[in-house]
Amino acid sequence: MTAKPLLTALLPLVEDLSRELPEAERYRRLLDALRALLPCDAAALLRLEGQWLIPLAVDGLSTDTLGRRFKVDEHPRFQQLLASPAPTRFDSRSPLPDPYDGLVDGLHEQLHVHDCMGCPLMIDERPWGLLTLDALDPDRFDHLEPGALQAFASLAAATVTVAERIQHLARRAEDEHHRAEIYRQASGQQHQPMIGQSPALRRLQEEIELVGHSDLTVLVTGETGVGKELVAQAIHRASSRARSPLVSINCAALPENLVESELFGHVRGAFTGAQADRRGKFELADGGTLFLDEVGELPLTVQAKLLRVLQSGQLQRLGSDKDQSVDVRVIAATNRNLAEEVRAGRYRADFYHRLSVFPLHIPPLRERERDVLLLSGYFLELNRSRLGLDGLHLEADAQSALLAYTWPGNVRELEHLIGRSALKAWGRRADSRLLGLSARDLDIEQGVDMPMAAHQSPSPGTPPLPFSPDGDLRRATDSFQRQMIEACLTRHDHNWASAARELGMDRANLNRMARRLSLK
Image (cartoon, rainbow, N blue to C red; front, side, top):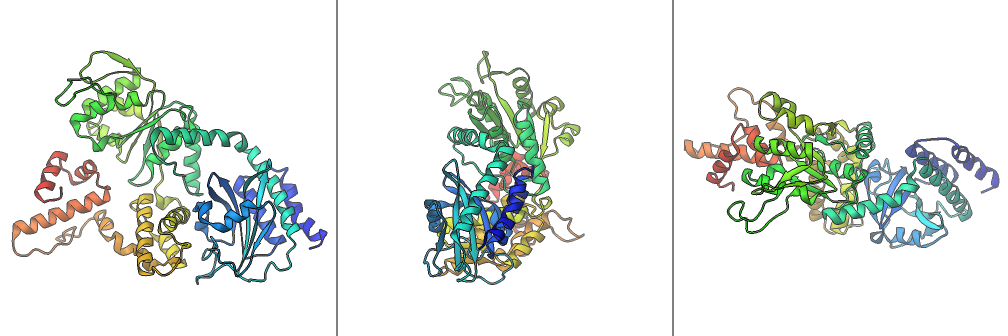
């Protein structure tokens, strides 16, 4: 390649260095220039984070690639690219599996990448990530000059540096990593990323960043399965309390007589079985954040005591008359309309207003456009690793089916669907190391007929759930009740309090009925 074409390809990137561009647009232009300089079928820019390679931009690869997280030690080609400071090309006969097999965009059949090369991006003499080029023609890169890719990689590194400085990423990266490590140690949970590029998710992320730097109480609302706990974790990581613990409690999972003890602690002898003093969740979260999940299920008596803690930072352990001070930031979450609950007299207005200082609504998956494909890519990569496969991807009809579906169970439903479908496909084709999931593998319609039907009004004279009476009225009634309760529990992820509310029953009565029907 002569100097003139090289200069022509690199000049727009040099001009972009002096322009303030969104990170995604800057990286898209980078790959456009790369493919103009070095013709290929696909190109990708990946950032190295610990032991993971995270795609920041792809050109010529399927959309779900952006949602994937590639573990370096599971992909030997990535290992070799990172280990060499110079560009590396893999022989077309190389036995090493290619991470992009089956992911080249616009191809409906399952094809292997035949010509592959790439190089690391070095910033401050350390590997920042990778640039990769792939082609379906095994001879595509025969006449390519490695120096051209090396020159491009140097300019790409400058582009990345500018992008990070503009957005203050370089200064914050080490601190964010440290805070995430403290959080994982304190909570015992793994940090899960918020995957997506839709305007709805970007608005949510902007609000998380905004409120994260404050100490305001946040009320997170949204449908079942949208990821309310994930948002709570993101708010905590963005706050000045990130080095302190994030303590979570599911208010709906606690028996009513134990809620106070769990929240405020108790002293020895406070009730039968209290054989020693015990700290509650507020004390455990002192200096950090307390996440109250399903806060709409709290009894009115507990709401009053919580209100005092939120207002004054003072609490009393159950059975004690001694006040204790705590410094806790509260994030609450619910899928209920608490304003409506207040109007109905089932929720304290003062407690609701204290919780909702900063309301934060999570959009359902059906309003997040093509984020479903990025999330699918993330879950596909997790399942590929669990099943020990070389590749796991979505066929074109599967992508269309995912985009057309309304996702009543949101992200949680998608996660379970991908895991279930991957396992079934692997079981049917256990001899294959590279699997593509079709719409038939996803089996979306069959898997969601019951939950979808439960949200629709039955026609007159038609039971909302199918059952086959055998002539015995009692057995037919029990069968109907059992199916209805099971379907309701499935919709609410086995949250008995939420199921009881939908069924119009007291929670204790539902528990008694479930035991009679052998559901417990």
